[in-house]
Structures are given as structure tokens and as C-alpha cells.
Length: 201
Image (cartoon, rainbow, N blue to C red):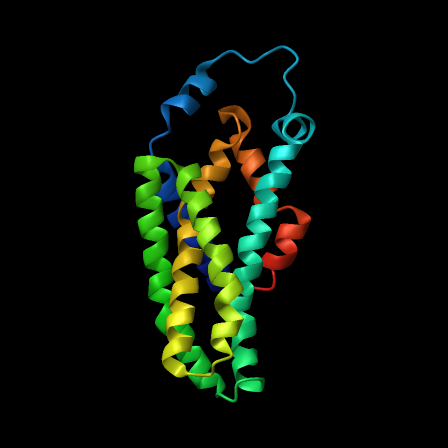
């Protein structure tokens, strides 16, 4: 009986995801690709990605691992750093993190909205540049051990991380032709180096 309940519990999120996915309308580009006749010598999508678009995979994977590495320092390492190096309790550091999380979500929403208007690459490049600056200043400002400064520092880094995350998925998908889009984006974000960092989050 317990196993049956566990199976039902695991199945519910998947059914909800399927319901959401089936409610989404396909893009005109994907519909055109689906309706077009397949080429006689057409390769498997994953093989085409690896043979013709491997540079794009490496580029997307590199940006993915960079943002995830900074996010790891922001969400996980800083809790221990604040406790061992700055003398604050884990509760205090966790409170600062929780305070900054809504700004992360706000950054995601804002950048996703803006990327629909002015282009994903434009927003992603600007957000990545801002993230480099915010990450470089993060630990020097945290080392002041002044709570308001620490809070503002985590808010700014959280917001810039959100601005990178907002357009990222759509940008990665659009880097590849429609017929191999899923394989290309999946390989870029789930390649071995990227997954190694993501798994620690």
C-alpha cells in the first residue's frame, strides 16, 4: 500500500507537467519544421548537434557552468563563509539569503519580459556583464561584516543572477535550429561539467 502511494505521489508532478506542456502552443517555426518532409540522409538530432553544432554546445555549456558556479557560492558556500569567517550564525546568514531570494525571482521575471521586447542575446550579455561585476565585489563587500552592506550585496547578486536566468533557457533553445533544438539545449545544460556544478546546488 505504501509503495502504491509513493508511485502515485511521483506520478502527480509528471501528470501536471504533461498537462501544462499540452496546453502550450507550438511556435510557427517548430510547426513548419514538423510539417516539412524529412531529408533522406537526415541524422539523429543528437548526432547532428555533436557533429555540426559542438561549438555552440560548448559556448552555452560554458555560460551555464559560470552562472551556476556563482549561484552555488551565493546560495551554499556563503552560509558557511559567514559563519566561519565573519562570525555570524547560520540563522543570520540564512535570513540574508531568504531576504535576497525575492529579488532573484524579480530579476528573472524582469529579464524574461525585457528579452521578449529587445532580444534575448542583448539582455543576456548585459546581465552577464553585470554579474561579473557583482561577483567580483561580492566577497570584498561581505568581508565588511556590516549586516546592511551584506544584505544589499546579496540582494544585488541575487537580482543579477535572476537577470541571467530569465532569458537563459529560451536563448539556449534559439541557438539551435528548430529540428535539433531540444537535443542541443539539453546537451548544453546537462553536459558533464555543467551537471557537476548543478548537482552541488
